[in-house]
Length: 489
Image 1: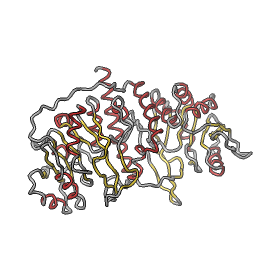
Image 2 (image 1 turned 180 degrees about the horizontal axis):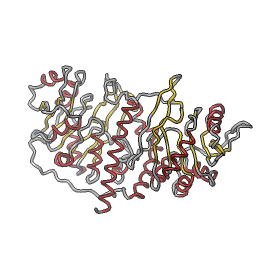
Image 3 (image 1 turned 90 degrees about the horizontal axis):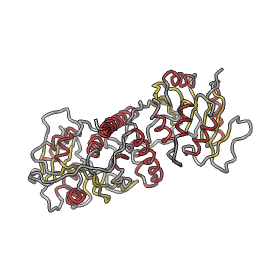
Image 4 (image 1 turned 120 degrees about the horizontal axis):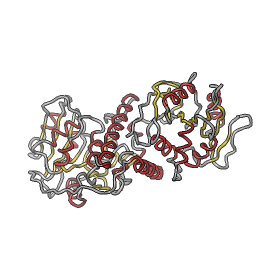
């Protein structure tokens, strides 16, 4: 029987590794299994029938080069990246090899079963596309590579990474080979991160992960240079000499936020500023009393209450209602209906930033709080990873640009905001960054409430996949636009 497949997995504990090795070998297709363990480890007990590779980390460049050397004559390479027992499905490895060989893929991955405690549930994943550049793309823990593609990518690694080696490997393979998703449940893995989606989404801005993020940005930047998608730090100028009645408008799209909308409105109307501003609340057919609360502020002439003529609008569509209103000011400033400004100087600081940094968009910082406004981890979200020279390139890798966001209205009117309720801000931010500077304010400007009614607090797998697929599509559209622009066509 064909045994041209070599497998690699990290060492966790003897029992888990032994069980995973047994599951892999049961296919009859595996010629050898290697375990990657840190220097000084005692290794596996006698009889485990596994080779050993010493490296500081399974995702390190050093470990991958050693894997490539160990698999120098192998047609296929498989990695299993978790430390808990793996249960491969019947004929699963044969199926992955078949698809890889039939399609000429450099890498194949599949849906899987996820075990949480005693419960087992399907976990579908999504198709890879050119713009799927985020380093947290979920391929699952079992990936099969063409041996040729694996070794070729490792040979082209010219940086030493402690954390970004596997990410760098995937990007380099994607430059020459397709990455194929098999929509079949081929194995069972143990899921240990049982946090809600609303808790996981801020991992990439946690200061404790800073060293990882620095490496990931370098790998992504090198990839963009290689494929002709990297933008040099050259920007279009902006002038703010357009005739507007208001210098700024705060925009709040809202639907059914009876518990929070009054706090949001008061935090805007309480602003003290040298600029003329108003507040545009786009009320998307609320049914819970939100509309009546908005109307209770009607005595303040700065409040503009818009109920759209259409009932098919998402958050982005509501934003367009405000931006294209003749009451919209020169700068349109975001505030979510859950949140509130941190003090009475926010509007002034944002408008000042536009003039001082000569940019078409400003992104601030915020502090994470619970419903009662007590600070919660990770606290301040300031996106200090942004750099003027490379921020708009790294923006293709991360899942968001930060908040609150503010826009130069004439530019926003040209681009428009997608009529969706997730990722609309990210899409327009990427499009603006293609041509214009994005300014930053690194001090907190608002309090971001995290509570059970946040739209992204608890997402099931299908909804999380839909969100990720949309953002990947936005990245693909933007990457293709940048490549076209750079190619001069």
